[in-house]
Image (cartoon, rainbow over all chains, first blue to last red; front, side, top):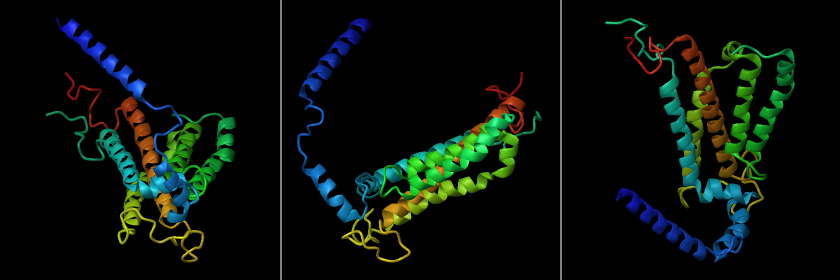
Length: 98
Length: 162
């Protein structure tokens, strides 16, 4: 019974994906270019950066970048918590028991 | 890890510094050329792993200090946030210290790209510090697992020996 339900769900999901792929517009031909054109034309002037990608990453989408920096800092904190010397942080018992 | 052969250490002596210069160039010119703080920071952090591979852990740990990398990892995101806050009169993350028309510096000592190049430097600083610290900590953990030093008597997953 579970196998039948699982197979039916897979078939339904595959059908949905096929339907979605049919709806996707062709690659390289965006549906609307108004926003792209605005950024390409105005970003160097508005943000004083010749590199439009940098003005996107650090200015228009600065929140996203600060999130990325936070992810890196979180990864560092996790690795420090996991791998730091246990004797140095006072958790080790020096091999003593009892 | 023991140091590698003389050939490797000599190649490291000559070429490793170019990696630092190249990474600094990517960070510094992020507002003009492809790349930026993340990419340049990753290149600079590779320098430390190159040193570790060539010279071995004992010499490299005598040269570097973890605290500096920890400070850089904290200072980078914080200064990034502060530079983002400078744009509060307009909106958050607005290049407020650059001239809106662009091209003309507002001051001789400020970069003409305004907060964008300062943010580039901040992110580069944070990435260099965080990645270097991660490399050092994970490298130290290999030594801890091999010798059992600094593990507080812990061996493997079993905390208490039976």
